[in-house]
Length: 302
Image (cartoon, rainbow, N blue to C red; front, side, top):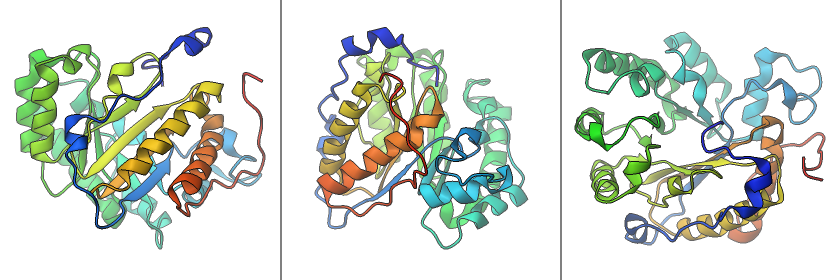
């Protein structure tokens, strides 16, 4: 992910500490039942994972099957670039049969990046997208609408109308990137609407844009995007802090927490996820399954 990327030499100077919980997060009542936790990456088609978590000589056609054996969720970026036919979606869903795996499809870029959300084409593309991804059935996780860095509060009326038009029977999350969304009064206005609509505010933890780690949980399903830096020592310190925060959130009345890992070199995604799982199990008393690392390597910074 290029968004928020900074030079590696500057990483030790970044204040990676997570802010305190936002007002909507603080207001969530204690849970009667622990929310589910879904972990994974953004793609299953990683050839560099052959010999790491995919067995040697694994065919690309079998990558998804092995991905599902190692993770229980995926931030599905491939739907950002095209709307897939129902048969393809059903084929992917069948790979997850008998598991609690979740696919979290990203809205097509024709909607999120090449429209202001107010056009008839955006509405038609949205319908096509929904008619496609609904075929994931019980394996459908939260949908992920990512706005470009150029989409700011000047377009809020189009955004708010679009969000209000979305179906309430789907879990939907929104990632904002324009700096002004994080300034008042825009921040409060947007997060209040998201809370009213039960739409999640995506929390993006990336080195160069600390404002995107806003810590507002506005719906029962929260979505976290963690962008590491090649197993730099700060990656582990940041994960430790996230584990403590998730430990607190697991006590709240939420339905699910989705946490998806990104790395500049995705070879390291399974390794940092393995560390995350072990720390969650230790701190939170969970029994999450770690990625099955066939072979491990050290940090880029060793």
